[in-house]
Length: 268
Ligand SMILES: [Zn+2]
Image 1: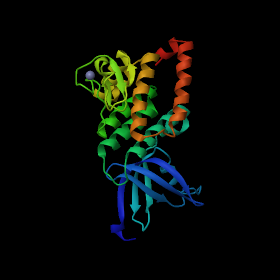
Image 2: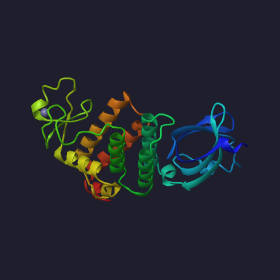
Image 3: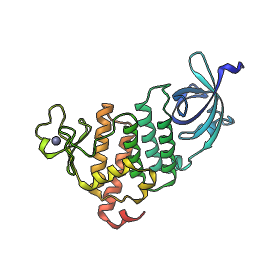
Image 4: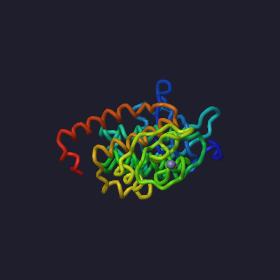
């Protein structure tokens, strides 16, 4: 094969779909080339050497050949396999959600090393740590930030006045103070956000992943954080995410469990 037709890519498998009897189309998010759709030939055959290196959410080094209609994976070697993301239902649901957000918010072939690092860090956290919900919120905030939609968490989006308490408007992109709640103009008034949830969001946006382990929000704060972020994402994407229904069901389950036995929430 002509060497110029081959290129290397370091990527994460964010989606897989069947293609014919033996092949799969993979959507990769790569460090140097952004999102790529590639064909993995023969990957569904049991003796395929590549298949174990190209499971969902795997971080791999790939050798890819340029094809006429679609590029083709010729070699794959896993760097990190993140096994818990495929064996533990709750972790799987979060990994699907994170991968779907990356897929929805990015175009093919647009390089974004910052997003690649964020995705890689997030999958590692989701595979290793128990604070899945907080990790997801950290990811959502930093995703929004790197896409240019950093939520305004300090000032009223309408008048600019610094505020400590108010509502969160998804269409306005952040906080709205009580003085502006009735004169919002183009923005829809948001829902009230508790001071604790606001403080937690500020901390997540300003910190590294290490902070997630120390946050321990109350059920009310958890609901407020979830509402503010999922409303913002739904507003920007103009629709629901496929992976969100499973995640919401899992969250409701843990929230109601924590109401029945409050101490269970404190267990880390
Ligand atoms: Zn205002």
